[in-house]
Length: 250
Image (cartoon, rainbow, N blue to C red; front, side):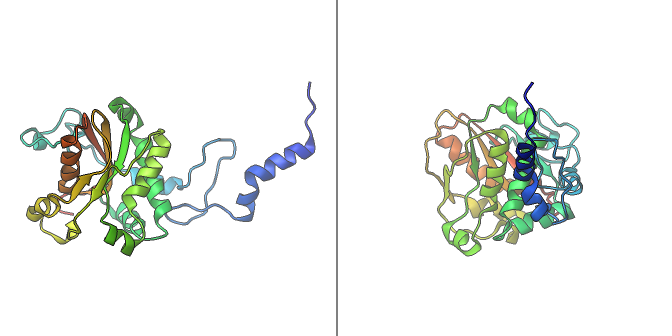
């Protein structure tokens, strides 16, 4: 039997825990100290309280994302007006905790929050996502002027965390070619027109099953515009994933 080298054990301990002892890990969302389980190979960057608050939600239609107990094959709200995508998942609604995290993720320094929410989104719906057989993840793009002004695109950072968790590739397959007004500045009735012709394809997607990612979906106008571009470019199917599905009254 091989004897245990105490120096080897000490080196292993410091290699695994040293940084945490010097710089105690904090929750990516609330900043509180993290209590890590060092016996596990998978460490969370979000505390249990934030995971619970960010993931808490009501039953939703898995096609349109609206609140519904008819969750699988479409609800009464989307039966008459089916969206162009095959399914939509959300981490939660637009409650206070999620709203705060989403708003912080829109600014430089919030990338770690966005990536953490992407991971939670993937973990919550892993079984359903696996059944979709997604081939590529595409974040909703931001116009280059707004991207330069903000310094970050939260949809991309969410896609990074999501794709890393699922083992998917992600791609900037879409480009935003028009600098439009912010959707939340407009009444619902004008949002579809605001993003019409705002996106263009920039990568080959023919025959692929694509998954669009964004931070918030309210009316679905942006996701519909992006889905239409992907489908016209030959994508086999489009699915959607968002951190928050906001009610239209939000």
